[in-house]
Image (cartoon, rainbow, N blue to C red):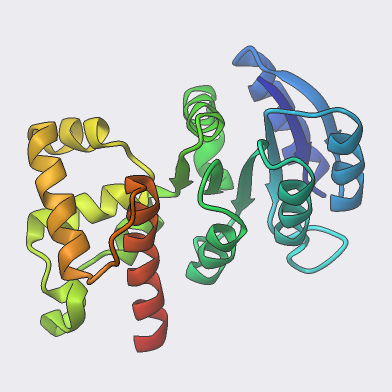
Length: 220
């Protein structure tokens, strides 16, 4: 893939370049701020742009830059990186778009295999969420209150993997159940979270995760 990087940390930026090249990707450019990245992708389209959430020109400049890149190049995958797994960052990331976007911890992508898998999923239009954050977000609330509390243990497991952006087949493999069973659990989740009918299953999957995130933010 053709990849562009924006991170104000020179050492981390150069490390990413090495990892990407080792995985066989072409690094089109590596820049220290959002303005330079926007100029780069405007002149030379890429498959995926990797951005540090906290970088110039704003405190959370990576998010603002990602919005500009998505508006300029809607087909470009976006990978937002941070040192911290924060729910409010995830909400902002998912507000940018519900296809080809990801939010991962910097320390977790410091390997060729993980980074390559993340980019492949983004390029195919998936949502990629840091697994530890996804797991925390869908943990059963104390007392089992609210619609999420009505989900069974297995439905919570499925929702957690949905939050990571996993496909039905990937969920089935992870939980050692059939793809048909996954479909039934997802249908039950849609019903219990009272999600409106929608012809796009992908869109309803995103709504399921967002419904929980919004409830969690209000309760918190």
